[in-house]
Amino acid sequence: MKVISPYIRTIVENNDTFTLDEALRYVRQRVPDASASTVISNLHYLAEKGELQRVRRGVYAKTNHKKKFSLVPEKSLLKKAKIIAKKLPYTTYCVWNVAILQNYARHQFASNYDIIEVEKEALDAAVEILSDIDSWSIQEKTFRSLPSALTAKRGTVVKRLLHEAPLEMRDGVWVPKLEKIVVDLLCDSPALAFIQGAEATTIIANLLNIYTFNWSKASRYASRRGKKEEIEKIYSNYRQNNQ
Image (cartoon, rainbow, N blue to C red; front, top):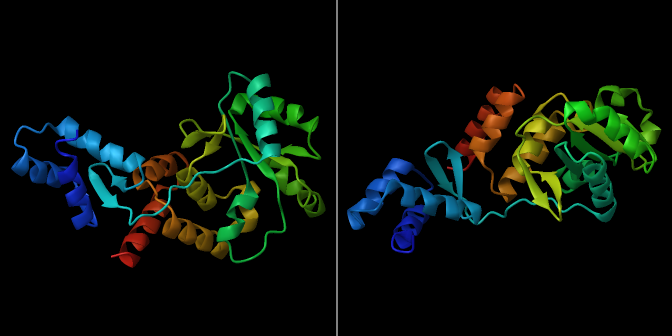
């Protein structure tokens, strides 16, 4: 890996976007016996470090030193997550709070609540568990019936977690990756209804300008949520604005 890494970095620095085939040709002009697997490993290494992003299969782009998004759960959210993990050990889950999007929004949020996502079979159990420690806890499907005065108090919306949603471990609990959050903002989700439309567009644009974003990962998740066309439109606009 060390032998070809300087050439990989050169092609990254000199090209806004490039394909795997282009990287292979460039490296093999200098190291003829370089294997495809070694080149791919180098590209994946730079992507993990945030120096490169995979736009889609076989296409890469430099990140222009953007930061890696990482959700840091606060103490109260960590507590809820660990209780869910302990009492529902066989379910996949993730936790976050709508307030993490406030810094990227145009207007002040009137609501502040946690979102805990679990697999379909665990929805009822999760609500029951959280009702013992929360001011309120409700499934997303009935969230719109909750009085607005109550949503201003810190509680929990329990949502269904889709299989293979983009997640990562942070401080010992599962949280959503940026790709999941952006796609979820494109969906008609009751829990995120107050930040749809122009506000969601503003938030997404600000997030993409600040953080690295894996378009391939977002596209796969968007397909499962029926929003592939929408994420591809956002990608097209993003590329036009950043050429």
